[in-house]
Length: 509
Image (tube, rainbow, N blue to C red; front, side, top):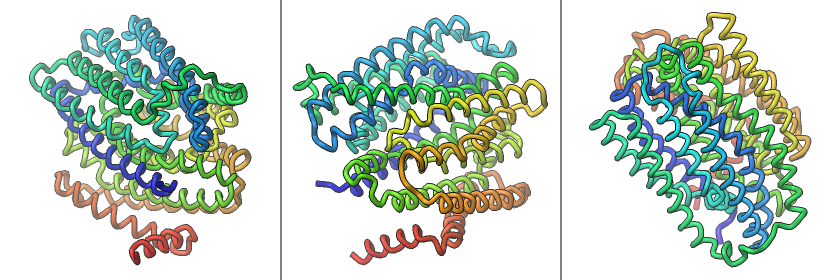
C-alpha cells in the first residue's frame, strides 16, 4: 500500500514529465501552424480560446465542488456514496457539454463582430463551431477524470492524454503541410478528443467497477447540501477566472486586430505551456493534502504549507528569471523576430506570470479545504478590477497590448495578493501571519531585484545571440545559476534545511 507521499511523488512526477511531452508536441504543432497559416490564424485560434472560456461559464465550477465531495468517501472506501456522487457528476456534465455546444452555435452567428475589420480569414463561423464542438465533447467524460484525480491516480489521465495528443499532433502536422487548411486541423482535434475520452472511460470503469454496481444509489442529503454550497461559491470563482483569462484576446482583437493577438498568443503559448507543467506537478498533491487534512484533522498542516510554499516560490523564481534571459531570443529562433513584442511588454508578462505561479501554494490548500464559498467575492472583485482597468487603458491611452497585462497585474496587486491568504488562514489552516508576510515580502524582493538586473543585462544584444545553441546554453546556465541564488538566499530557512535533510537521508539509504 503506497503512502500519501509516494502517491504525491508518483502523480507529480508523471504529471511533470507528461506535461513536458505535451508541451513539445504543442510546440511542434504550433511551429508548423505558424509557418503554414500565419499570424492571423494564430490570432483567430487565440480568440476562439478566449471566447470559449467565456462560454464555459456553463461549467459553473461544478467540477471542483464535486471533486472535493469525493475526498471523504474515497478516504473511507464508501463505494456506494462514491458511485452516487459520480452519477450526479455525470448527469451535470452531460448538461454542461450540451449547453456549451448550443451556446457556442448561437454565438457563432456573431463571431465576426469580435474581429477587427482588417481580418481576411474566411469561414470563421464554421471554424468556431468546430472549436466549440471539441470543447463540448470533452465535458461528457470529465467526471471520470475528476474521480482519478481525487483518488490520487491522476497519472492514469496523464498517460491517456499523452498518447492521444501524440497521435493528434502527427495527423495535424501532416495535414497542415499537405492541405494548409485550418478546418481540417480542427476536425482532427475533435476526432482525437473523442477517442481520448472514450479510452479514459474504458480505463476508469476497469479501476472502479463498483460505479455500475451502485448506480441506483442517491447522494446523502448532507453531502448534497455541501455540494450546493460549494457550487454557489464556485460560480463566483468561475466568473472571476472567465473574465480574467477570457477577455484579453477578445479586447485585443476588437481594438488592435488579429495580427497583434497572434503575436501575444505566441508568447502566451510558451508561458502557459510552462505554467501547465508546473501546475500539473504541484496540483497533483492536492488530493494528498485533502486526504491528510481529513485523517489528521489539520495537525502539523502549517509546517506542510510552508514547505510546499518554499518549493513553489523556488520553482516560480528560477523558471521566471531563466525565461527572462532567453524568451525574446527563443521567439526569434522559433518563429522569427517579426513576432516580437516590446521589452516592456515581455517584462510585464513575466511579472504577471510569476504572480500566477507563486499563488499555486495558496490555491492548492484552498482547493484541498474546499473553500469555494469563502472565495466567491474575491473572484468577482478580481474580475471587475481586471476588466475595468484593461478597457480604460486601451480606450484612453496608447499602451496597446500593455493595457490588458496591466489590468491583470492590477487585479493581482489590489485583490489576490492579500485576499487569498486571508481566506485560507481564516477558514482553512491556522498559521503565523507574520511569518507568511515576511516570507512573501522577501520572495517578492528577491524576484523583482533579480528581474531588474537581468533585464538590464539582456538589453545588450551583443551579449546574447539569437541561435538555438545560445538559447539552450543560456537557459541551462540561468537555470543552474538561479537555483544557487535561491539556495543562498534561503540559507537560514527551516524549510530548506528540512529538504536538505530529506535529500541526505535518501542518499544515505
